[in-house]
Length: 154
Image (cartoon, rainbow, N blue to C red; front, side, top):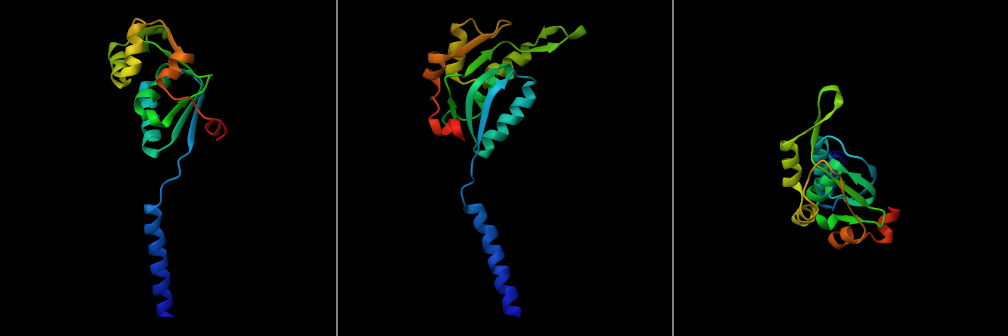
């Protein structure tokens, strides 16, 4: 009976250790209708995606802080569809009566996280300011790979 307990302990321990050596399954995060929000929340969300190994499919609107995905998740794990539409603007905070007040520190934080290709594109459009700038279509597909059909289905 003692040998049976020992055998089960060895099997359980082996299974536990084996689970760490197997590659982790990675799911796909789909972005399709995201109007943005607080920078910190998106940094946390996309950092978790980056650390999990998940792929990201941008398949629709991704505005404001949502665009931080481009600077946090590795480029090789991001693809875009023909519906992808990214909108960039300067950061702001709600002021008295909810009116937006520009946030230079927030805008700098956004800028610091964007990859070089996005910064070049933004500079060519006048930089980050109150006016929304949209990256889509050919311009976007020149920067990020188009999703294959399998990515759309998952």
